[in-house]
Amino acid sequence: MSKGAWIESDVGRMLACTESWCETPDCASVNLAELGVPMVMERLWQHDVGVDVEAGLANMADADRLTALRVGSRILRVLDAMEQQSEIKAMAVGDGIETVLARAGLRRPVL
Image (cartoon, rainbow, N blue to C red):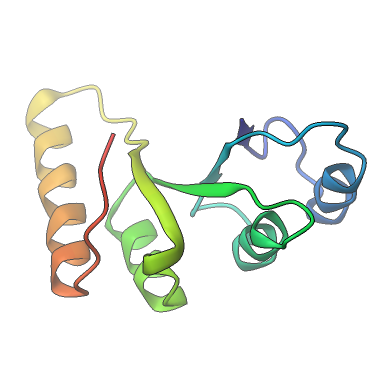
């Protein structure tokens, strides 16, 4: 399941929608570039929801946000959400994200 702003841009409404789920997904992707990330993650991790969180990172700033939240041990995995069309640019961004995560000691599978 994805929690993207293009699906529901209002964080409060999105959080309220999780309360009406009849069945919960095993995992939800949360894009670090979007508003309300800490609230969304905490809501998904709550015991009545209990959804694993996949951190969507599009760039080094997103990786910095993730490490600043200090929730790395709770993240299931990292989703490479880069939008670069050039292989050279994509490799540079990917290397930068990897460096930020490694420097913070955050070791999670990357998709």
